[in-house]
Image (cartoon, rainbow, N blue to C red):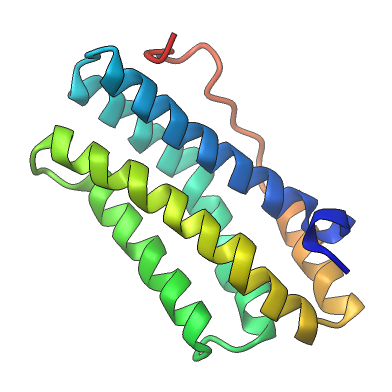
Length: 151
């Protein structure tokens, strides 16, 4: 079955859409000459409230389905680490934002186009239910009311 249709993966897939939206916001802000530090502050809040919890669900419940040593899992984990380093880095924010924007999209492509298909081939209904439970247990944190630099 397609990952698009599985209710157990809806939370994960919704998070991926939020990540793609962050990438779009970064592009919009950079295109509108918004101060890079301002965009970077937003990215750091996004990392804290959205990305890290999402990564934890993937790393604790989703990726173990095919094993943490699987090449696609290792690649995804490296992407998680790279994104965190880029977002928290102290280098030139303009360069970092450009890299973050590209890395966000590449990470979602990897997970949506390759990794989820591999996981679905191996997953049991119980494992998918556990992914859904783990995601549902995440606290809701909205960034509404925070700096909307992209508008």
